[in-house]
Amino acid sequence: MKKNMGATDKIVRIIIALVIAGLYFAGIINGTIAIIGLALAAIFILTSFISFYPLYLPFGLSTLRKKSE
Image 1 (cartoon, one colour):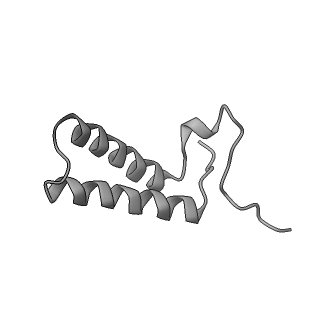
Image 2 (cartoon, rainbow, N blue to C red):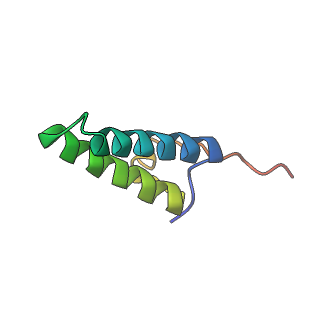
């Protein structure tokens, strides 16, 4: 797996995941929406830690800055 996520992308994903988790634990979201949200939060956390987002591949996207030579 080639890394395709930059630092800003990772930070935004972690913040979104924490917000979703906070909403769940505060009891603001529940039921099916909570399950979907927590699954999405888990995906965001996982992809942030491995610096790879599979859905970027088919579109040729990358938020990783290129190293200057």
